[in-house]
Each structure stands twice: as structure tokens, then as C-alpha cells.
Amino acid sequence: MAAPGPAPLLPAEAEALVQALRGTELRDTGGQGWLQQHECVEKLNMHAILSASAGQEQLLTELLVSYGKIPVLIGELISVEIWKHKIFPVLCRLEDFKPRSTFPIYVVLRHEASIINLLETVFFYKEICESAGDSILDLIDYCHRKLTLLAARSANGQIVTPVELRPEDLPSPSSMQELQQQAETMEFEISLKALSVLRFITDQVESLPLSALTRILNTHNLPCLLVELVEHCPWSCRQAGKLKKFENGTWHVVPPEDQVKMTKLDGQVWLALLNLLLSPECQRKYHFNGFNKSQLLKLRAFLTDVLIDQLPNLVEMQRFLSHLAVTEPAPPKKDLILEQVPVIRGHILKNNAGKWEAITKHQVKHIFSPTEEELKLQAHRWAQTYSLDMMEALAPDKPRCRVCGVEATKRCSRCRNEWYCTRVYVFAGPWAASPPLPGQQLLLEGWIPGLSTAGKG
Image (cartoon, rainbow, N blue to C red):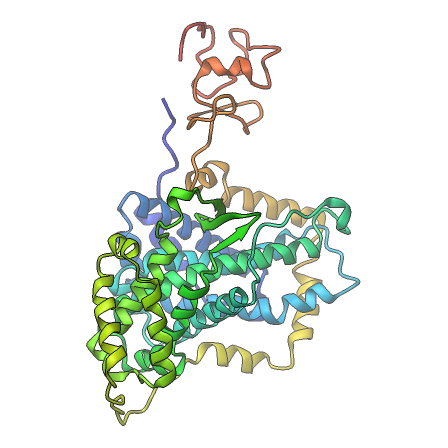
């Protein structure tokens, strides 16, 4: 019988972690205080995923709303994004910077992915979107930047696929070059998470502040950007004549019978378009000029019967586009208002303008050049945060039996790497030459010492 997986945090633990969330200064990124914040975010992120899979995420949602922590998370998200674009490139250019380990830098890069993943999990709820307050404008701008980069790279044929770096090509096993490759791959996955967050924001289009709607429709023209994503489909590519699609964190070869099947990412784009184009308020505010109209009408070529069968709501989209093709919508009504603008990113950039190299040198000296003892202490803390059992519980794919390939529930307790579906198969495993004797260390989790495995499954 499979051992139970790790449980979500207790309510008191989750509340303590939410209360501990604080904003940090860009200069302190990667420092001890910042690492404590990162641990809080990581634990809440894991808790959110486990809770969502069990249908119990309502408690975390209530805590984040009650303590007003969504604006804090958005502020931290934008801060680490700026660090990645302003500080990380300078770090990579430093010829005399040879860190013992690049993992402390990797943790900073991962921080952005952890926050956007947490936001993706909780933004499904209307109260989360509303609790963002004015910071929703900053989040909309953030999503726009990510999707613009995603669309531009796809239009230029720059598809991010895993690249194997050979050790002999690198200055050291944990080099800055390898870290740059990891950062590029992570950026692609972050952009896909931003797409999901944006779609959840559009779900609440009727209750969004007027400034947020104006920003979505007119400032950034997100409907046309979403059309580009439909057109170029960055999460799909062809390699060696085979169609590959990106799902659950990896690229998969798609069998011919599934090539017309809509993926989750395809669905996110279409649902966001439905929310924006069929809302009466959006239709009233959006400018259907010649360019916008021609871009939107491109969608008709993709609205096939097969696609509509998978998402029946697209029938309404099809009708709307048919009507748009033969009419000239009225110009948008201009409301005389004082429009709010996002402030978080501008504030961080203004406070640190001209200080990027100084901040980099400070972080190299005090943060990213730890002693061996400090590395050991950090490694111990990271091991507690990223436990093996927790990582396996969060993995999208279940482990497979080393012998027959079916889903496995028993792991070898010697190497902790190989999995088996039955105790019998242990004798076909790496320890086949010396099967365990009664009383020796368990070879498989759940093995009963002294019990013969002959004929047992």
C-alpha cells in the first residue's frame, strides 16, 4: 500500500507564514532576511498546490485577503523581475566573480517563478483579485510584459526547449553560463503562468476598476496580443517532423490522434478572449479601428468545428466575429476621469536608478560569496524547504516502475531513486545480486523483514 503523501500545512502554520510575508528592498535580495521571505513563499506555494489538489485552498485564500498580502506578493514579484533584468546581467559579466556555488543566485531567479505560481493558484477567486487593490494595475503591466516577450520570441522562431549543456563546454559544473540557460527556460515557464493569471483577471472584468479595464483594452491592447498568441502558439513546435507541446513543465511529443486536442494553455487564451470581447463593458470601451478589427478577424480561421466541440462557448465568439466583419462598431465612449497608473515598478526603478553596479558589487561581496560554513547552513535550510517527499508530491508525473514502466508506489530505500510497482521486481533491480536477508535494511518501502516475496505482488 502506498504511503500517504505530505499533507498541507496546518491552519495555524499557514496563518503564521502569511503574516510573516513582508516587502524587501532590492539591495537586500538574496540576503538572510530575504531568504526567510523566500522560504515563506515556497512553503505557501507548495501548500497552495497541495490544498488545491484536495479542494481545500479556501483557507489560504481567506488568509491572504484578511491580512492584505496580495499587494505584498505583487510588489515582490516585480522587485525580483527588476533584479533579474538589471542585476543578474551585470553578475554574469563579472569576469572575476567565480562563486563556490551558483545555487544562491538560482534561488533568487526561482523566487519569481514561485510567486507567479502562487498567484496563479489563488487568483481563481474573485476576492483575491479584488484584494489586490491598485496593485492590480502593476500585475496587469507585468503580465503584458511577459506575454509580449513570449509572442515576440515565438514570431521570430525562438522556441525555448531544454538544451543539454555538456560539462566540457562549461568553465565549472555550476557555471554562470548554465545558470543563464536555466534562467531562460524559467522565463518561458513564468510567461505561461502570467498568461493564466491574466485570464483569471479577465474573469472578473465586470468588477475590475475602470483604470484596469482601460489598461487592458487601450493602453496595452491585450485582445490583439492574445490573437498573436493564438496565431504563433509559443507552447507548440515541430522538431524532426514531430509535433511537440509544452504541458506540465515539459515538452511532450503529441501523437497524431491528439494533435487537434486543445491544451490547457490554448484554453486560457481563448477564455481570456471570450471574457474581453463578449463583455458589454469591454465592447463599449474598446476601439474597433481598422487595425484592431483586422487582427481580431484572424481568429475566424482558427474557430474550427473540432475546436468549438471542445469549448462550446466559442460559438458566441464565432457569432460576434461574423457580426464584426459586416459592421462598423461605434467609437469607444470616452469618460472624463482621472486615470490611475501603476506605481510599484516605477518606484523601484526610481529609487535605484544609477545604482545597479553598486548594488551588484554589494551583493557579490555580502550575499553571493558565502563561506563554506555559510553554504552548509544554507544547504540545510534549503533541504528542509525542498524536501524530497514534497517535491515528488508536487511533480505532475507519477513515478514509473524501473522494470515494467507502470505507475509505481514503492521506492528503493537504499538508493532512494528507483521505483517499483511490486516487491517481486526488486530482484530485477540494481540490488538483484544480493537480495536482502531477514533483519537487514529494508530494500523497498513497506518490505516486511523475514517475509518471503515468492509469489507475492
